[in-house]
Length: 378
Ligand SMILES: NC(=O)c1ccc[n+]([C@@H]2O[C@H](COP(=O)([O-])OP(=O)(O)OC[C@H]3O[C@@H](n4cnc5c(N)ncnc54)[C@H](O)[C@@H]3O)[C@@H](O)[C@H]2O)c1
Ligand SMILES: [Zn+2]
Image 1 (spheres, helix red, strand yellow):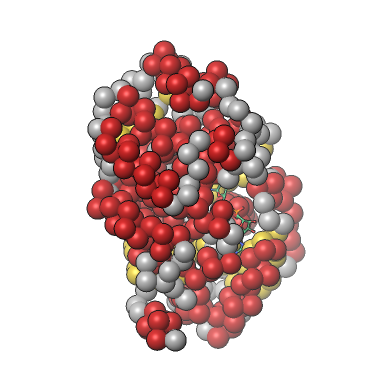
Image 2: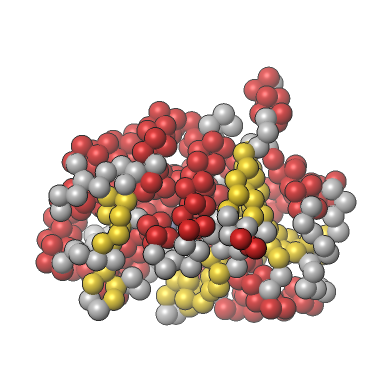
């Protein structure tokens, strides 16, 4: 047991998201759920409500409750919503807010979002608008939520008009990330989250990308000697970008690397669970890199490096590798044109000058894009 003892003693990583009056800490470590009570106690003025989903509740709710009780926190109510993207809907939001009010939610209480991105987005939006806003804390339990959705304050639900079409910016008061919670996460979900983690290195930190080339497999396996550091370095990149541009007026759009393609794939497949968001992002990052090289911005050797890294960790190359129906270049092009990042017929793309050097451009013409999709997807 010396391994475990060493990690429990290790001080967690601590990051500050510098947003003035809305600044908050992200605390990251292996096995730190036990500390969550003490961390939350320092900022709670009232009762604590837990929103989670049924899968996370089965695996980890007891441990969270224990941590809160040990710190002497008064828990108001716990609700486990059904797992899955369809839970991010108006009906579920309506029900959740009314149920919180019914159970006595007051302005001084605090909501804990304990789950993946679905729970974080839904509970975060409920916290943003119930009683004109109550505090909330994110305790993300998927790798995607740990490196991406729990940080940055975007909350949302989906409607028939598309994903995340109703939402708000509402920053959490604290994010507590225990990488040991990933032990129960299915392998496929872990790989999907890894794509977003790696994406941050690809955008802005070549040294981190290179570290992942050595330690990526250990990170994916949830090794306590590597997973917390990877999540920390990835969150640090996102936190810095969010602090510079909270509402996505400019630089924050860099975080969308790979997402123009990813959203087009997801939309074309009707947001089916056959393609996870992180899997789409993995394809999207490969395509953004390939397009950057084709347009002469990025050395082909960097594209190869990215391909080698993702291949080595078993991240699928193209949609067809996941037994998805063929995606026609013309359909993907149509989806890209419908994307909210397309204005006046021009799409803002995030491209690469190399690994760790992403930039924004509206200078990709339609013909070049169509030809690229034709070559990539057929
Ligand atoms: N707000 C943002 O900035 C932002 C950023 C990226 C993604 N998102 C949103 O996040 C959502 C996707 O999040 P996700 O990938 O975390 O999916 P998810 O929340 O649906 O979780 C995936 C699955 O894993 C299960 N699960 C969660 N934690 C587990 C654990 N520790 N052990 C076992 N099972 C566990 C869940 O019950 C679910 O079945 C999408 O709706 C997306 O729009 C939001
Ligand atoms: Zn994403």
